Length: 71
Picture 1 (cartoon, rainbow, N blue to C red):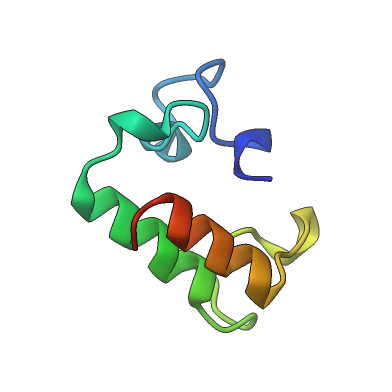
Picture 2: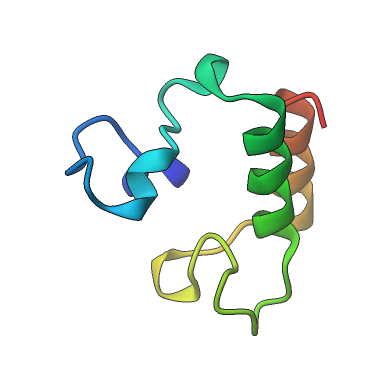
């Protein structure tokens, strides 16, 4: 789901270009932690990822992402 918006085809001047879901190996520890934090925010938070208008992840899916990122 992240790669819908966070990918290498993005205009690199937009903020979401700082995270490329297609290249998770390139993420540093701080970036991985931030990804998981943003996924776990309450649905009411404007920083919640993914934004509600683009979809949602279940608790199990978020846990899978965290495991894949070693968090």
